[in-house]
Amino acid sequence: MVFGGSGYLINSITPFTIDKHRHAHFPEGITLDCDMHLAPVDVAYCTYGQLSEQRDNAILLCHAFTGDQYVAETHPLTGKPGWWERMVGSGKPIDTDKFFVICSNVLGGCMGSTGPMSVREESVKKELWGTDFPPITIRDMVRAQYKLVRYLGIDKLFAVVGGSMGGMQVLEWTVTYPEMMLAAMPIATAPFHSAQNIAFNEVGRQAIIADPDWRNGRYWCEGVVPARGLSVARMMAHITYLSEKALTRKFGRRVRQGSSADKSAGNFTGPLSLFGDIFEVESYLRYQGSSFVRRFDANSYLSITRAMDWFDLAADYDGELTAAFSGTSVRFCVISFSSDWLFPTSTARTLVRALNQATANVSFVEIETDRGHDAFLLDEPDFDRTVQGFLRGVAEHVGLY
Amino acid sequence: MRLDQKLIAEMIKPGARVLDIGSGDGALIDHLFRHQGCDARGIELNMKLVTFSVAHGLPVMHGDADHDLAYYSDHAFDYVVLQRTLQAVERPREVLRQMLRIGRYAIVSFPNFGHWQLRLKLLLNGRMPMTTVWYKPWYETPNIHPCTIRDFLALCQQDGYIVEKWMAIDEEGERAPWRRSIRLANLFGEQALFLLRR
Picture 1 (cartoon, each protein chain N blue to C red):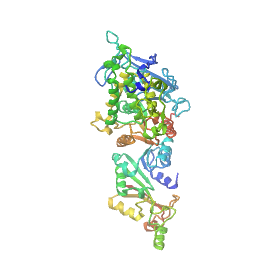
Picture 2 (cartoon, rainbow over the protein chains, first blue to last red):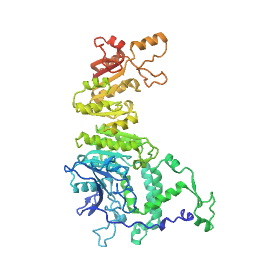
Picture 3 (cartoon, rainbow over the protein chains, first blue to last red):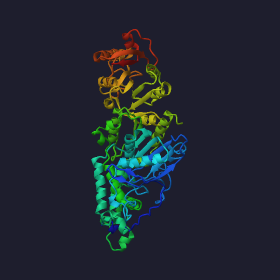
Picture 4 (cartoon, each protein chain N blue to C red):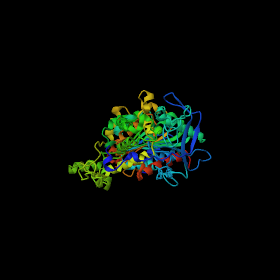
């Protein structure tokens, strides 16, 4: 195993335990795109700010693939700040003094919503779903969110906002429940998953499946996790979230010295050895991989990546994306990032042109940055201003404030 | 808002659907929304101005006249506006055609290359004329398709567009007094403003 020589045994890492997350319980469940009925369904969520008396100030945030509902508070498992803490909060671009912000863990996730790690209630043995968890789609995730929104007493959302896979959910919302929102902000996303992105997902899945600790998806019976496979999947995916320029700026060709444990073990650790000194970028990726396996379930990874791969908004409209948006009254703000090669501006433009053809009200901004796909999670002042301004514009338009 | 933008706004009926191509900082669409209750949207090429506009709550998208108009459906707008940009697009005739396909009316303004100063400078110096309106040297100018007021009228006639209104305006956007004679307007007007329909 490649990690062995550097004294870096990823499998020695134990995952966090899953706490109880705040959630809504729907015993009636939902019917999925695959025609299976999934019941019961739990939707774990967090909220920020106050719902107004008119119940007209709710913003639904849709998290990205490996994100979760802990948007703007310390994560209960990792102890790290929420993933969009710089965007969501009092006086921040998505201002919780004005808006009631909801974010739920996606269906198929592993942070409290029903997913492969949930107990299969209808089974005799009360086992976990594991790989028997029904195949889900982005629309199924949106159906679960819809139930939550209704459960919270909201008839119409002010806006649905999300980046990456969250952006796919935003787009799905505008097509499946077009009357349910005033505005939609799909960020760093696409109306379909590209062949290249499906290819990357497949490499990740194969890495997990190839890990002997995956045990045909039943690792949870045996108290192990396919940590090596999952971390390799994460490492590979993480590269796609960055850009060559960002990697060069962050790490260049800097080298970190091999650990002393290797030297005492008599391993040759010169600069040209296989397992000696490592590049900074390698060390960074290994860290990303190892911290990821502590908070993310491998079968969730398989389920959700599959859902992304199947995403194609135009599929139900004979391949005509415009038809999906026909007659929409939703105000759109499409945002892309110049160095994002996973969800490039060219694809965002395809989306925008389809929206134009549908005579939708659409704003479209490409934020200039060299930080790649992940830029939507980072400090980009132009991006912040755009998010804030768009929301304010829509609010002004409908006389909200 | 510039004075000629006020003249444009006066041409637009309240509550109309408007597409402003080259919306700049969004002053016109902001005015149309606030004061005339229009559903006004913008397309702008300069990303800084796009970000500025969206950050001010205006529906503006990044794009340009040459490449994005083809994606709009027929009759999507009541008015399609192109301010001081016609001379800088790749295919002015096609842009006009697209404007009048997606809008009932087209409002077009452009700097008049028939202005007497330009004529005189070319005649006397034999060099590409430079004025306050045409201030960039020939090798740097984005204005690749300059035309005169009469040239533009000829194109409208050729393509069957009806000129509802026209006026010559000076550089500040003030309406110039040459309303009776096109030839005089073509000699003394620094900018031209047209309201066209199919």
